[in-house]
Image (cartoon, rainbow, N blue to C red; front, side, top):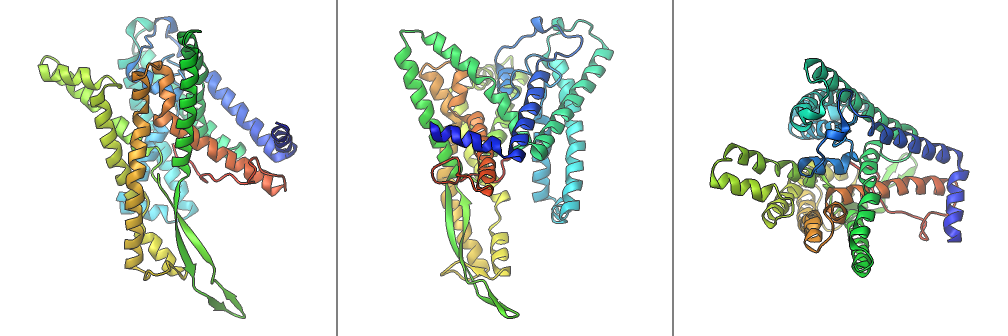
Length: 434
């Protein structure tokens, strides 16, 4: 305990780190306060906040979606736009060229992402007003209300995006990921208290077992996030002028879960399609079966299809983000090689084989983590609290916390303080994607 307080003292004794932490807390408080500001012309007491897609999106938006807040769409449209641009940089040569142009290319991609965010937010805002908010909750229903509300929702999303950029620039951690994480964590205390109250004194032992199980699930997710397969490489010696360079040993860290939470996000987006198709055949027996089965996020049919999609998307996203040919070319260009493997095509094939071998168990474990909330509900855990037993929520929280701890660790080690852990090093990702 003494070491913990000493570490906290060391953190706040570094002026730059102290200012960044306080800036981050200030921006997060602004974000949370904005999520309670309801759209003008909406009666919050008449809003229906029951389950379905409303409950799912509320997990990431901290309740802003169900409250019809000015931040109701949050940062999600920006994430959608970022995913689209990321896929375009893989599939479209024009965007590939732009990505390789350095700082100027990144600035142009950022501008395109922002414009696409505005377009996506406008469409989603209009759909949100038309399909989600009950007409009884709208005090003055009309064209002026819809236009003004769309403008406010678009401005709210752009303000959230600005907050995320400011956290990244003047705070600690990745700003966009921090906004998502704070929305998820904001629901944890209420869910935890609700679970404890529902168990009561008679269920105290069951509640303790739930917390122990949650601890081991979190540890397993941390292990999945951090797991890497190190491929040893050797750099050839080069004589430049009167000095000799190279000749050192290094390794390529290939992550077991190189795709992060993206497969779950893609799969979750497709899981809304069966319910939409059921609406087209709502009068038929098949339509009723599909609607009742795939609208229940805890049914075995839903989770089986969900797990299969995650397996497929994990291989797909790993294939488009980790290119063995590029790795082999970079090694050859810098005078590096894998011992026992010829440079060029054979190196590319060797890396591809390793990726295939480590992606399979990684994708299976990722699918298991994604469907764990359904098992938790079947075991008697409250649906709100069960969301923290796996899925996107847990993966995002673990990834963001590890990334933030790594940045704090870097500041401490730069100032010659002892690290936060006994080893003096937090092995985490250098960058977290949402």
